[in-house]
Length: 434
Image (cartoon, rainbow, N blue to C red; front, side, top):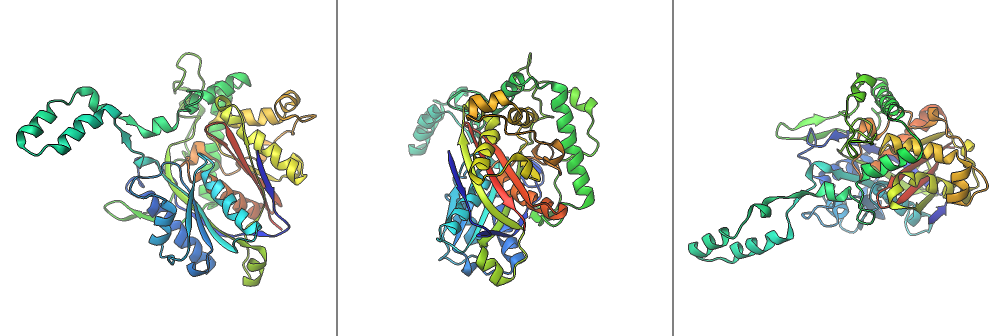
């Protein structure tokens, strides 16, 4: 368990921006994750009118760190034109990496170690590499060492078909090494244990698409987005391509269970989309924000992380939200708006049920009673990862940015953004607008 809480107004979110989120293999497939991060970093500073030389730190959340860009935070920051004297750090907490970047920067400000920090999350799931078996190294090594044509032919002759059977790194990354379950299997488990039907999951997925499509049509995302010029034609990518305005229950019902063919309820339709994208925020000391006259988006009030059984990782938000409310002295009903990342429909619905359950909260959290009933009408009001996608390192930053934008639009005071985390963790952040 880890929690912290800020004093009134001490960590301000000055501004933020994100790229469009694009399904893996589509319009952003040729964009390196450091390029995605560079774009949102530059745009965030430009919108705030804040010079890079005045930053104290850059923190980037990323999960599938590329071999050609060790510490991608530093690579992206330098590519963005930030001065060499500004240090940069990459953090990784699986699905909560983007939120962890915000928490790390906010903690530095809270403890007086920084006044302004650029915090971001980025992921290119299109470019997660293929991995070859370790036994392939031996014949490859022989081939590299061969000097004559005869030696090279002899080395080639030692290759076998099994040496060319790669495993996708994404598949490994989505499999928990402790419980041995793929993330979708953990979602099936939560669905079974909380009695969440296939129809309920599909209904939730449909709602996510409908809300995201409506938000796009109403222009709710317009002030978040900045274009990415990607691909050989160098055409601007300006819109999320995951939401389906014409999605129907009938179409969702036709999809077969993906992980448990016989008894499973999780499908590609009620699970998050595999996606590319990046998001960034500029955060600053409250006194600095006031001195600069910034019309801030809101304030970071607290952050909590918690751990649980990896096989039930989807319930992580319940544990983290419990810790956050305990630390801040707030109740669930005090929170106006929520973002819980939609890794899976069963997982989000399971969190809602668990928070409303006296028995679960007593047995698992040590509370006297339930956390409370979370109103679906206050949850993910502009859709979530089922429609928009989940570039794992970026999502934590996106949901914080979107939550603050929605709070501003609705005039809300308190919001909580939360994610489940592969490996059995949860993260939650409390945000406030004056």
